[in-house]
Length: 362
Image 1 (cartoon, rainbow, N blue to C red):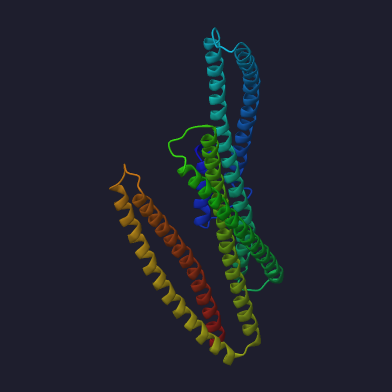
Image 2: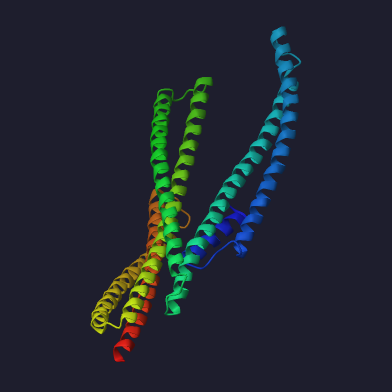
C-alpha cells in the first residue's frame, strides 16, 4: 500500500484508536470515497492499455508462429534468426509493460480493499459510538428521559449484530486456516520434488517452480485474509465493550433514579457503601493499569533504541525486535483505552454518590 490510500488508512486507524467520533459526514470518509474513485479510474485506464498491448502482442505472436512454422517446414533457420529474435524481443517488451501495469493494478485493488474496510470501520463506529454518546448525554442530564428504553433496545440490537458478525468471522477463520494448512502441504510437496531435481532447468522444473511460486502467493493471500478477519473481530470486540459499558452505566443511572424516587434512606446508605467500594476498586485497578502502561512505554523506548542500532540491517532478529515493539505499542494503547473507560466509570460513580449524599442530607 502506498500514497494517499496508505495515509488515509493510517489516519482512520489513528482516529479510531483515539476514540474520536467518525461518521459518513466526516472529511476522511469523503476522502476515502474520492480516493477509491481515483483508483478505479486508474484501473480502467490500465485495462484499456493492457487490451491495446494484447492486440499488438497477438499480431507479433502470429508473426512469430509463422516464422517458426516456416523454419520447421524448411528444417533450417537460415535467414530467420534476426527476424525471430526481433519479434520475440518485441513480444518480451510488451509482456514486460503488461506485467508492470498488472502489478500496479493489483496494488490498486489492494488499496481499494483496504479503503473499503476503513469505510466499514467508520460506519460501524459511527453507529455504536453514536449510541454510546447518546447514553452519556442522558446521564449528564441526571434524569431518565423517555428515550432510555429505546436507547437500551438499540444498543442490544447493535451488540447482537456485532456478536453475530464476530461469530461469522470465526467460522471463516477456521475455514481459512484449514485452507492454509492444505496449501502449506501442497507447497511442501513441490519443495520436496524440486529438491530431487536441483541443478536442472527444463520444462518440468520450470512448471514446478511456477506452481511453487503460485502456491506461495496463494498462501500469502490467505494469511492476509486471516489477518483482515482478525482486525474486524478486534473492532467488534472494542465496539461491544463500549456499548456494554454504556448499557451498564445507563442501568446504574436508572437504578439510582428509582432508589431516589423511593425515598428509602436505608437502601440509599447501603448503595453509598457499595459505591465507595466500587470507587476504591476502580482507583486500584487504574493504578495497576498505569503501572502496566509505564512498563510498556519503557519497553517501547528500549526496543526502539535497539532497532536504531540495526538501521541498515534486515535479519530475523531485527524482525523479532520490530514485532516486540509493535506488540508493546498495541498493549500500551489497550491500557490507554481501559484507563479512559475507568475514568468515565469513576466520574459516574462520584456523581451518583453525590446525588445519594444530597438526598440523605434532606
